[in-house]
Every structure is written in C-alpha cells, then in structure tokens.
Image (cartoon, rainbow, N blue to C red):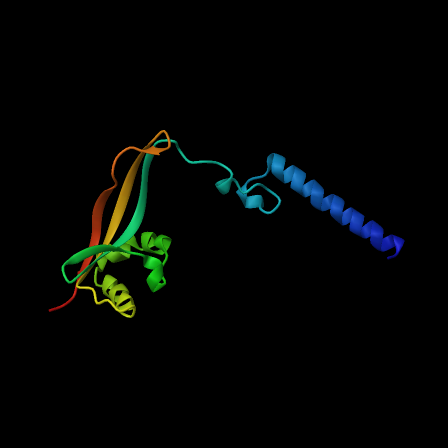
Amino acid sequence: MTDTSRRVRMVAVVIVLGLLLVGSWRGSDHDFPFGPFRMYATSGRPSGAVRTAALVGVAQGRTFLLDPETIGVRRAELEGQYPRFRAQPRLLGALAQLYARNGLRLDELRLVEQANLIVDRRRVERPTEKVLAVWRRPR
C-alpha cells in the first residue's frame, strides 16, 4: 500500500468517526446511520393502552384465534388496513380463502382490536376486544 492510499484511508476513517461522534451528540433519527436510531433506544410511556390487531375464526361452531402469519400477513399490515376492512368487510373473505388452503374452512372471520391496559409497565386487567369487521361465508 502506498503512502498516499494510507493517507486517503486515514482521512476517510477520521471523517466517518467524526460524523458518528457529531451524529451521536447532536443527531436524530433522520441522520441514521450517523445519528442515533432513537426509536429503539427509548421505552414507551409506562401507562396507557396497547392496541393490537387479531383475527378470530369460527369453524364448525368453534371460535379460535388465528395467527395471521400462517396466511402470509403480518399484524402491522392488518392494523394499517383498518379503514379498508371496516369499509369492505368482504376483504376478510380473501383472508379466509387463504386460510382454507391450510385445511380449515372458516364459517366466519372477524378482525378484532385487542386493547391491554398498562399501568406502571404492567398489564392490570384482561384485554378488551372490539370487533372492527366481520365476514361470513355465504350460504
């Protein structure tokens, strides 16, 4: 390695380290990777409600919780589509068809929002559920 290439590498290292130091001291999430990614560096409020999406299936009179990932959907995708599912509950029918590929035909599929009440970082009561949309198999 020549002296010039060593100097160029050393200058590059000093610049990158300088950016990391300044970013850590004065930066924000928008400066990532030279600033801290604070979203994962801090905790949420110690008290409040935590709301999550859930799919509840009904087949042959039995009601059970479905894992959305078994049909290739993440929970965050369900949560992001609340307005669409409320406006068009028949969209849940497409999810029910995907679930039928796993071997179980659903008679009903519900999109439910579960809320857990948290006080001082501890759940204080059983989750409450609010049904957002319902799809029923046509007869």
